[in-house]
Image (cartoon, rainbow over all chains, first blue to last red; front, top):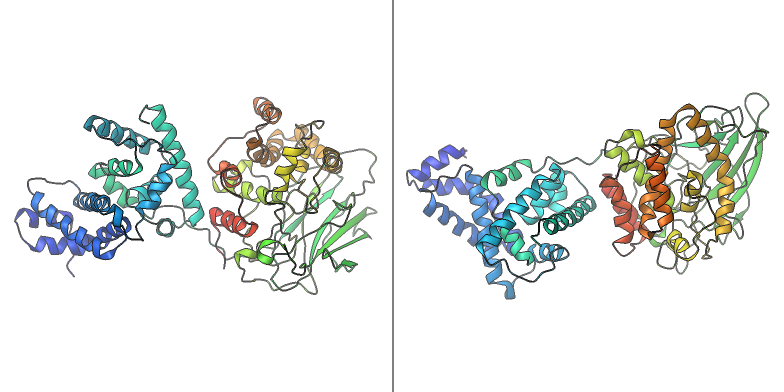
Length: 188
Length: 388
């Protein structure tokens, strides 16, 4: 199995060499499918989502030249999975981590209002990013694995060498801190 | 904002941040390896000068019926080096055997009084403790072990000497494979009872140590000592919920001990440990009585330590004021907070609020009370221990 670094992958994409897609699948397929599956709760849906994301990468690179191709790809996968989740919300299957993460976040995000305006969204994003910088590395990685990657608690615990309870406790405290932070910033 | 929106917005993270996140996966703290067994030690309180580290042993016993021993002894000049097998009358209802013996010390003319408590597994019955763990039910009217004898006329500071206790005869195997439901903990606060205050102490001590704030952890637990698959005698107890909530909480809500000097760390310890297994509420008088028993230990220690080593005093307080501040802060009694602040302002308590120390509050107050087994398993989980 040939391993490619990101530069090589970008070169293949720029050259419109279809081997790029195979290479992307080889390098990042497992990670992407995992993220999608945790969101959608279905490996079939995850596969479709990943394929859609690959196509999107193919269609956008170039002209987009991501600095971190892996990050670019997983972000597309995540967005696509969430969009699909939203669309299929009424018929969602079990196994998705989204309902659990939503329930967890609902404890601190009580408002039912949707973030509609671009300005609000940008302000919220910036606020969240600033908040993330206040976290310890441990809390940050756990938080992001849970709410960005939608990983189950048990997988996070395993990845970080922690017990499940510690992960849950870290998440609880971080959510509370997030709530306090967002309120202080006037974003909640 | 809707949670799904939050998840969406979180996805707007920049590439570099996403990449950093992916790169940092797996860089968290590892579970503490639990490979070593450590001989547990018990605290031996003496009446001589100088304060030494207090080490408390913890062990576990298997689900099969085992005989274990809890000893508290006071020695003036000698150190107990061996625990002899104790036999006595066993109350088949409570499973509790209590004997007292006095033996001559190995050196000098000091007298050692030893009070022993043997724990056996209580026969299963309706309403037995969760997980089938041994239930300790004090005999009627007896809350504590006999008061230790003080032959000294003056209350000079007691000696704290770490002692290794070895069991003989029916001692369980060195290492036992344990299930979470078999967790038991030791009498950390030396009150002769087995309560949640004890394992809060463990948790807090461990958490303090785990967070790197070694200076605040008086009891030098090691991760290995807290591994509850280790069977080498020592003090093994199990706690029990009563009427659906922790008994000390019941006590604090229903019978606030207003006449007691809350500043005294011995009292803190005592009051923390005033849980009751018989179902009778603990009255302020009982707290005071318990306080009286611990006063000799703790006031002596405190005085000695303040005179000789203020940092040590803070360390002592650090252990118990963690409980004081966090387990009890949930009751929101102004007096407690006031006392806590006083100590803090005086610079005696080098205490800092950390995430780890909030653990107790989170565990108890913000969620429905779990069963003992799940709570203990969760505590161990959070502390990073693995059952082997």
